[in-house]
Image 1 (cartoon, rainbow, N blue to C red):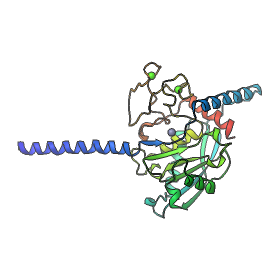
Image 2: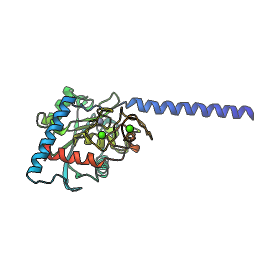
Image 3: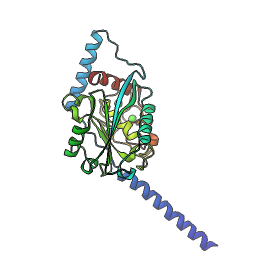
Image 4: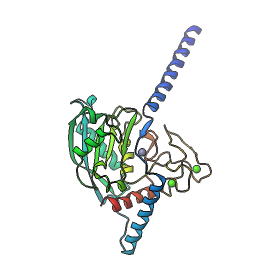
Length: 290
Ligand SMILES: [Ca+2]
Ligand SMILES: [Ca+2]
Ligand SMILES: [Zn+2]
Protein backbone atom coordinates (compact mmCIF):
# COMPACT_ATOMS: atom_id res chain seq x y z
CA UNK A 1 0.00 0.00 0.00
CA UNK A 2 2.68 2.40 1.04
CA UNK A 3 4.79 1.41 -1.95
CA UNK A 4 1.81 1.99 -4.28
CA UNK A 5 1.23 5.44 -2.83
CA UNK A 6 4.87 6.28 -3.34
CA UNK A 7 4.70 5.13 -6.94
CA UNK A 8 1.58 7.18 -7.48
CA UNK A 9 3.21 10.24 -5.95
CA UNK A 10 6.25 9.76 -8.16
CA UNK A 11 4.08 9.37 -11.24
CA UNK A 12 2.15 12.50 -10.38
CA UNK A 13 5.37 14.44 -9.78
CA UNK A 14 6.65 13.29 -13.17
CA UNK A 15 3.42 14.39 -14.79
CA UNK A 16 3.71 17.79 -13.13
CA UNK A 17 7.28 18.21 -14.37
CA UNK A 18 6.15 17.20 -17.86
CA UNK A 19 3.28 19.69 -17.91
CA UNK A 20 5.51 22.51 -16.64
CA UNK A 21 8.05 21.63 -19.33
CA UNK A 22 5.27 21.60 -21.93
CA UNK A 23 4.08 25.03 -20.80
CA UNK A 24 7.63 26.39 -20.98
CA UNK A 25 8.08 24.82 -24.41
CA UNK A 26 4.93 26.41 -25.78
CA UNK A 27 5.98 29.79 -24.43
CA UNK A 28 9.48 29.48 -25.82
CA UNK A 29 8.34 28.12 -29.16
CA UNK A 30 6.33 31.31 -29.71
CA UNK A 31 8.81 33.63 -27.99
CA UNK A 32 8.88 35.88 -31.05
CA UNK A 33 5.23 36.73 -30.66
CA UNK A 34 5.42 39.79 -32.87
CA UNK A 35 8.14 40.99 -35.24
CA UNK A 36 6.60 44.30 -36.24
CA UNK A 37 9.43 46.73 -37.00
CA UNK A 38 9.10 49.59 -34.53
CA UNK A 39 10.01 53.11 -35.63
CA UNK A 40 13.02 54.66 -33.93
CA UNK A 41 12.47 57.18 -31.15
CA UNK A 42 13.20 60.01 -33.61
CA UNK A 43 10.69 58.57 -36.11
CA UNK A 44 8.11 58.18 -33.35
CA UNK A 45 8.57 61.81 -32.37
CA UNK A 46 8.03 62.85 -35.99
CA UNK A 47 4.90 60.66 -36.25
CA UNK A 48 3.48 62.14 -33.04
CA UNK A 49 4.35 65.70 -34.13
CA UNK A 50 2.66 65.13 -37.51
CA UNK A 51 -0.41 63.78 -35.72
CA UNK A 52 -0.60 66.91 -33.56
CA UNK A 53 -0.35 69.11 -36.69
CA UNK A 54 -3.06 67.07 -38.39
CA UNK A 55 -5.34 67.38 -35.34
CA UNK A 56 -4.71 71.12 -35.08
CA UNK A 57 -5.54 71.60 -38.79
CA UNK A 58 -8.75 69.61 -38.36
CA UNK A 59 -9.72 71.57 -35.23
CA UNK A 60 -9.10 74.85 -37.08
CA UNK A 61 -11.64 73.73 -39.68
CA UNK A 62 -14.07 72.78 -36.93
CA UNK A 63 -14.08 69.11 -37.98
CA UNK A 64 -14.83 66.61 -35.22
CA UNK A 65 -12.35 63.75 -34.98
CA UNK A 66 -14.28 61.32 -32.84
CA UNK A 67 -15.84 58.74 -35.12
CA UNK A 68 -18.83 56.90 -33.68
CA UNK A 69 -18.38 53.24 -32.74
CA UNK A 70 -18.90 51.05 -35.79
CA UNK A 71 -18.90 53.96 -38.22
CA UNK A 72 -15.84 52.95 -40.28
CA UNK A 73 -16.04 49.81 -42.40
CA UNK A 74 -12.64 48.27 -43.10
CA UNK A 75 -12.53 45.95 -46.13
CA UNK A 76 -10.43 42.85 -45.40
CA UNK A 77 -8.62 40.91 -48.13
CA UNK A 78 -7.50 37.50 -46.90
CA UNK A 79 -4.53 35.96 -48.69
CA UNK A 80 -4.18 32.32 -47.70
CA UNK A 81 -0.68 31.16 -48.59
CA UNK A 82 -0.22 27.40 -48.44
CA UNK A 83 1.82 24.46 -49.65
CA UNK A 84 -1.18 22.29 -50.54
CA UNK A 85 -4.87 21.75 -50.09
CA UNK A 86 -5.04 20.52 -46.47
CA UNK A 87 -5.19 22.53 -43.24
CA UNK A 88 -1.83 21.07 -42.18
CA UNK A 89 -0.46 22.61 -45.38
CA UNK A 90 -1.75 26.03 -44.38
CA UNK A 91 -4.93 25.97 -46.43
CA UNK A 92 -7.16 27.55 -43.75
CA UNK A 93 -10.88 26.88 -44.42
CA UNK A 94 -13.27 29.75 -44.98
CA UNK A 95 -15.01 28.96 -41.66
CA UNK A 96 -11.83 29.91 -39.78
CA UNK A 97 -11.49 33.14 -41.77
CA UNK A 98 -15.07 34.01 -40.83
CA UNK A 99 -14.28 33.17 -37.19
CA UNK A 100 -11.24 35.45 -37.37
CA UNK A 101 -13.41 38.33 -38.58
CA UNK A 102 -15.84 37.67 -35.71
CA UNK A 103 -12.94 37.77 -33.21
CA UNK A 104 -11.73 41.06 -34.70
CA UNK A 105 -15.19 42.61 -34.56
CA UNK A 106 -15.65 41.55 -30.93
CA UNK A 107 -12.24 42.96 -29.98
CA UNK A 108 -12.84 46.24 -31.81
CA UNK A 109 -16.50 46.57 -30.75
CA UNK A 110 -15.86 49.78 -28.79
CA UNK A 111 -13.90 51.36 -31.64
CA UNK A 112 -15.06 52.97 -34.91
CA UNK A 113 -13.94 49.91 -36.89
CA UNK A 114 -16.02 47.12 -38.38
CA UNK A 115 -14.17 44.51 -40.44
CA UNK A 116 -15.82 42.84 -43.42
CA UNK A 117 -14.41 40.32 -45.86
CA UNK A 118 -13.88 41.92 -49.27
CA UNK A 119 -12.04 39.00 -50.82
CA UNK A 120 -10.30 35.69 -50.23
CA UNK A 121 -7.56 34.28 -52.44
CA UNK A 122 -5.42 31.18 -52.07
CA UNK A 123 -1.88 30.75 -53.32
CA UNK A 124 0.32 27.67 -53.22
CA UNK A 125 3.93 28.84 -52.94
CA UNK A 126 6.55 27.22 -50.69
CA UNK A 127 8.78 30.32 -50.57
CA UNK A 128 5.98 32.68 -49.65
CA UNK A 129 4.61 30.17 -47.11
CA UNK A 130 7.72 30.56 -44.94
CA UNK A 131 8.25 34.27 -45.53
CA UNK A 132 9.89 36.24 -42.75
CA UNK A 133 9.64 39.99 -42.06
CA UNK A 134 11.61 42.01 -44.61
CA UNK A 135 12.39 38.97 -46.79
CA UNK A 136 12.28 38.96 -50.57
CA UNK A 137 9.56 36.28 -50.30
CA UNK A 138 7.40 38.72 -48.33
CA UNK A 139 7.99 41.47 -50.90
CA UNK A 140 7.10 39.14 -53.78
CA UNK A 141 3.97 37.83 -52.07
CA UNK A 142 2.68 41.27 -51.16
CA UNK A 143 3.52 42.71 -54.59
CA UNK A 144 1.53 39.92 -56.25
CA UNK A 145 -1.39 39.74 -53.84
CA UNK A 146 -2.09 43.08 -52.14
CA UNK A 147 -5.46 44.65 -52.95
CA UNK A 148 -7.17 47.98 -52.31
CA UNK A 149 -5.75 51.25 -51.02
CA UNK A 150 -4.68 52.57 -47.62
CA UNK A 151 -8.15 51.84 -46.22
CA UNK A 152 -7.98 48.11 -46.96
CA UNK A 153 -6.65 45.56 -44.51
CA UNK A 154 -4.63 42.89 -46.30
CA UNK A 155 -4.30 39.87 -44.02
CA UNK A 156 -1.84 37.18 -45.08
CA UNK A 157 -1.84 33.76 -43.44
CA UNK A 158 1.41 31.81 -43.71
CA UNK A 159 3.87 29.71 -41.72
CA UNK A 160 6.86 31.97 -41.02
CA UNK A 161 8.48 29.50 -38.60
CA UNK A 162 10.98 30.31 -35.88
CA UNK A 163 8.26 30.78 -33.28
CA UNK A 164 6.95 33.88 -35.04
CA UNK A 165 3.23 34.63 -34.68
CA UNK A 166 2.93 37.72 -36.84
CA UNK A 167 3.90 41.22 -37.89
CA UNK A 168 2.30 44.35 -39.26
CA UNK A 169 2.98 47.74 -40.79
CA UNK A 170 1.96 51.13 -39.39
CA UNK A 171 -0.43 53.60 -41.05
CA UNK A 172 2.36 56.18 -41.32
CA UNK A 173 4.35 53.77 -43.54
CA UNK A 174 1.66 53.41 -46.18
CA UNK A 175 2.61 56.46 -48.29
CA UNK A 176 6.24 55.41 -48.75
CA UNK A 177 5.63 51.64 -49.03
CA UNK A 178 2.04 51.01 -50.09
CA UNK A 179 2.62 47.43 -51.29
CA UNK A 180 4.18 46.46 -47.96
CA UNK A 181 1.10 47.60 -46.02
CA UNK A 182 -0.71 44.85 -44.15
CA UNK A 183 -0.67 42.10 -41.55
CA UNK A 184 0.93 38.64 -41.70
CA UNK A 185 -0.06 35.97 -39.17
CA UNK A 186 0.87 32.37 -38.49
CA UNK A 187 -2.06 30.38 -39.87
CA UNK A 188 -2.38 28.26 -36.72
CA UNK A 189 -3.03 31.43 -34.67
CA UNK A 190 -6.49 31.77 -36.19
CA UNK A 191 -9.42 30.87 -33.88
CA UNK A 192 -9.38 27.13 -33.19
CA UNK A 193 -5.83 26.76 -34.53
CA UNK A 194 -3.06 24.72 -32.96
CA UNK A 195 -0.78 27.56 -31.72
CA UNK A 196 -1.86 27.14 -28.08
CA UNK A 197 -1.95 29.45 -26.06
CA UNK A 198 -2.18 31.80 -29.04
CA UNK A 199 -5.10 30.01 -30.66
CA UNK A 200 -8.05 32.37 -30.19
CA UNK A 201 -7.33 34.75 -33.05
CA UNK A 202 -5.84 37.55 -30.98
CA UNK A 203 -2.56 37.51 -32.89
CA UNK A 204 -4.57 39.16 -35.66
CA UNK A 205 -6.26 41.45 -33.11
CA UNK A 206 -2.81 42.54 -31.88
CA UNK A 207 -1.29 42.95 -35.33
CA UNK A 208 -4.32 44.90 -36.58
CA UNK A 209 -3.75 47.17 -33.55
CA UNK A 210 -0.34 48.04 -35.04
CA UNK A 211 -1.93 48.43 -38.48
CA UNK A 212 -4.35 50.92 -36.90
CA UNK A 213 -1.44 52.86 -35.32
CA UNK A 214 -0.80 51.38 -31.86
CA UNK A 215 2.54 50.42 -30.33
CA UNK A 216 3.10 47.72 -27.73
CA UNK A 217 2.05 48.65 -24.19
CA UNK A 218 5.71 48.13 -23.20
CA UNK A 219 7.00 50.44 -25.97
CA UNK A 220 9.34 53.05 -24.50
CA UNK A 221 9.52 51.03 -21.28
CA UNK A 222 9.07 53.21 -18.16
CA UNK A 223 9.74 56.50 -19.99
CA UNK A 224 7.32 59.42 -19.78
CA UNK A 225 6.25 58.99 -23.41
CA UNK A 226 6.12 55.17 -23.23
CA UNK A 227 3.56 53.98 -25.84
CA UNK A 228 2.24 57.46 -26.82
CA UNK A 229 -1.09 56.54 -25.17
CA UNK A 230 -1.88 58.29 -21.89
CA UNK A 231 -4.27 55.82 -20.25
CA UNK A 232 -2.08 52.70 -20.59
CA UNK A 233 0.26 52.52 -17.57
CA UNK A 234 3.94 52.31 -18.51
CA UNK A 235 5.36 48.79 -18.67
CA UNK A 236 9.08 47.91 -18.61
CA UNK A 237 9.00 44.72 -20.72
CA UNK A 238 6.53 42.42 -22.44
CA UNK A 239 4.35 40.28 -20.19
CA UNK A 240 3.88 36.60 -21.08
CA UNK A 241 1.40 34.03 -19.82
CA UNK A 242 -1.36 35.49 -17.70
CA UNK A 243 0.17 37.64 -14.96
CA UNK A 244 -1.85 39.49 -12.34
CA UNK A 245 -0.77 42.52 -10.33
CA UNK A 246 2.41 42.98 -12.34
CA UNK A 247 4.06 46.35 -11.73
CA UNK A 248 7.28 46.53 -13.74
CA UNK A 249 7.41 50.35 -13.57
CA UNK A 250 6.81 50.84 -9.82
CA UNK A 251 7.78 54.52 -10.13
CA UNK A 252 4.90 55.09 -12.58
CA UNK A 253 1.22 55.13 -11.69
CA UNK A 254 -0.86 52.04 -12.30
CA UNK A 255 -0.35 48.29 -12.61
CA UNK A 256 0.97 46.94 -15.93
CA UNK A 257 -1.73 46.75 -18.65
CA UNK A 258 -1.41 42.96 -18.94
CA UNK A 259 -4.96 42.43 -20.19
CA UNK A 260 -4.39 44.74 -23.14
CA UNK A 261 -4.39 43.42 -26.71
CA UNK A 262 -1.08 45.22 -27.31
CA UNK A 263 0.85 43.23 -24.69
CA UNK A 264 2.24 39.68 -25.27
CA UNK A 265 0.03 37.69 -22.87
CA UNK A 266 -1.91 34.54 -23.79
CA UNK A 267 -4.93 35.08 -26.05
CA UNK A 268 -7.30 34.06 -23.25
CA UNK A 269 -5.89 36.82 -21.01
CA UNK A 270 -5.95 39.79 -23.42
CA UNK A 271 -9.32 41.39 -23.90
CA UNK A 272 -9.19 45.17 -24.12
CA UNK A 273 -8.18 48.37 -25.82
CA UNK A 274 -8.33 51.53 -23.69
CA UNK A 275 -10.34 54.66 -24.63
CA UNK A 276 -7.13 56.52 -25.51
CA UNK A 277 -5.92 53.64 -27.70
CA UNK A 278 -9.28 53.81 -29.50
CA UNK A 279 -8.85 57.56 -29.97
CA UNK A 280 -5.33 57.10 -31.34
CA UNK A 281 -6.49 54.42 -33.81
CA UNK A 282 -9.35 56.68 -34.94
CA UNK A 283 -7.02 59.65 -35.43
CA UNK A 284 -4.38 57.59 -37.23
CA UNK A 285 -7.02 56.08 -39.50
CA UNK A 286 -8.30 59.52 -40.45
CA UNK A 287 -4.81 60.88 -40.98
CA UNK A 288 -3.50 58.01 -43.09
CA UNK A 289 -6.27 55.63 -44.16
CA UNK A 290 -9.39 57.61 -45.01
CA1 LIG B 1 0.96 54.67 -21.84
CA1 LIG C 1 3.33 51.04 -12.51
ZN1 LIG D 1 3.22 43.57 -31.75
